[in-house]
Image (cartoon, rainbow over all chains, first blue to last red):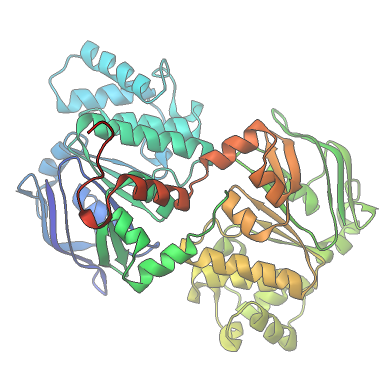
Length: 252
Length: 264
C-alpha cells in the first residue's frame, strides 16, 4: 500500500534521514520508534508531503503505486485528509481555533467528497459520537480538554476513511487515564476501516499494545525491524536493547 | 522537615488546593503523583515560597513560611532548591555552565563547580561551556548541580525527566537517588508518571482536583491501592511487562502456526 525506498532527507549541510526503506501493507499497524532527533517525524512528514521548505528529500515513496516524491502540492493536498491522514501530538496546532469542531469535521468531508452540507453535517455528528463525543459539534476547540481535542482530531483524520493513518506521539501530551481511552479509539477506528497505521512514539508499552510490527530508527536510519513481540523479547541492535532496558519503569 | 496543614489555594475562578495536609520527614523521598489540574504545580510553588496559600499553614524545619514576606525567605531559598521539567528554559543560554551552577551563591567558586560537576557525572571541562553544547539529559544534570550549590537540605524535583528521552530518564532518576543519599537530601518528587515515582520514592501522595486522595508507603499504595482513583491511575499506566505477556500469549513464537483454539 505504501512503500518507502531509499528515502533520504537532508539540509544543505547535513543528512537527517539516510536511506530509509520500509513498507506498510493494507490494515497493518506499524510502530516507528526512536529518540527525538532520530528522524521519525521527518519520515512521517515526507510521506504526508509536509517537509519544511528548507529540507530536500530523495528516494521513493509510493502510495498505492503513485510516486509522492516530487508530486505537486495540488496532488498531495488531494491525498491528504482523504487517502492519508495524520494525528499530531499537540491537537491545538492542528485545529482551527475559530471554527466549531463539528463544522471542521464536516468541511473536511465536503472538501474531498461530493456530499451535501446536510449529509456532511450528519456524518460529522456520527464521527464525533464514534469517538465518544456525542453532541460536542457546536463547541470550539478551547472549550474542550486535551483528550477531547485529540479525539476531535482523530474523528477529523478518519472522516474520509483513509487507507493510511499516521499518528505522531498522539497520546504523549495526555493524562494517563485519557491516554488509554484515546489508544483504544485509534485501534477501533483503524480496525473498522481496515486503515493501515504508522504509529510514531518513544513509548514501548504503547507500541506493544498498538502495533504488529516495529521499525527502530537511530540517527536517521532504520537499525532494526520485525514483529513487535520478537523485537521486544529478543532485540538485536544495541540501541533497541538500551531502549528496552530504559523502559523498565513500571507502576505496577 | 516540611509540614502542610489544611492548605487551600484559591485563584480567581479555581480552587487549586482544597485542604492539603501532609508531612515530609527528613531523609524521605516523597512522591506527589497527579494528572493535569490535580494541583501539584501549585503545591510546588507554595513549597518553594513562590506563592502563598489562601488559608492553612506551611512550616519548613519547624518555621512557618506561609506568612513570611519575600525578604525573610532567604533561608528557604538556600535550604530548599527546585529542579524544573525543562532544563533549557531554566538555564540562561548566555552564561557559562560554571556561572550557572554558582548562580544561587552570587559568586563563582571553582572548587565547588569541580565537585558538583563530578557529583552529577559531567566532565570537569563542562564548566567552561554553554548550555546549548549539551544534550537534554546533560542539561538536566547542570540544573541539578546548580540546585545543589547552596547545599540545600531539600530538593524539590518538578517533572524532572518528563521532557527527556526514555533512554536517559532512568540515568537521571538514578542520579537523583544517589545524590539524595550522598548529600543527605530530603527529596520531594512531583510527577504525572507513576513508574517514575516508584523508581525514586519511598512515600507517595496521590492528588486529584486539589486533594490528596491517598498517601502512604509507596509499595502499599501501588500494590494495595485503597482509593478508586489510585486504582484507575495504576490500571491506566502503560505497562510494558503486561503488554509483552499479552503478546506472548496470543502470538505463537517464531511465526509458527497459531495455538489451537478451544473446541477444535
